[in-house]
Length: 77
Image (cartoon, rainbow, N blue to C red; front, side, top):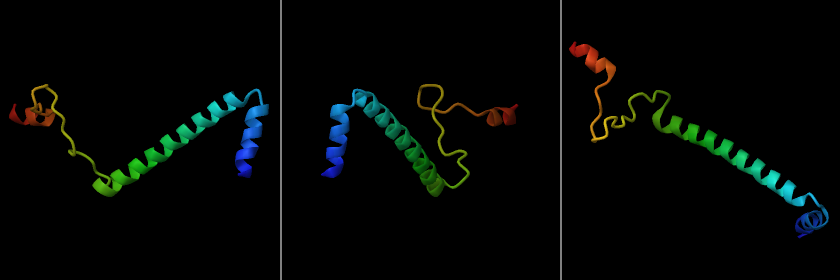
């Protein structure tokens, strides 16, 4: 309860309180993004290892099929 009262007093009697709260909120958001980014990287390494080549091939021509890669087309020439 003491912490609430401290912040309540600062908020009520500080004319810059809203600006400071906004800056604090932005700082927490930035911290969250950094932490989640590191967590995401760690999970990817655990799941897929360090080599991630060939994990995901998205269709490039819009009809649900993948286009041949450059290495595929060079081997047929």
